[in-house]
Length: 170
Image 1 (cartoon, rainbow, N blue to C red):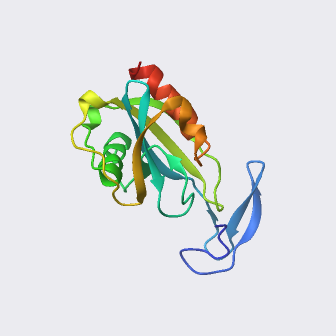
Image 2: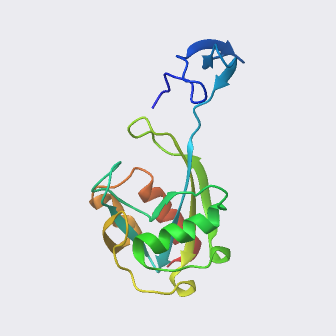
């Protein structure tokens, strides 16, 4: 959501050209009002040529399949947040130090929400627990990495599933 008012004083924002870009500006506070991306992280659990996917139960992307993940908490390291999200959404636990970074990238914008996401992978042998749909998940399933596109999915899910299998699978 593009801010219209200053979050500190409530004054209606104007615009000012700064460093070659038009930016929101508070004339009362005389400061720039930034609109930053939200940090998120997720984990692809790999078992041979399969990855553990969740079906999103809430917007954005309700009904889409993707690797388990979500928002990082304030002061939470990305690996720790990714492991927490994995457990919350699937019941599967992985030690943060066992996670391998696949990518860090800006994802597609959904509903004017900008996300920078860190994707990790872990071998199923380094996890504990049985998959069960948890918070934000309508379902959880093992899916062959080359079959992710056969169901509704987030655009980054096939790429991340394939990268995870290359790292740990087959």
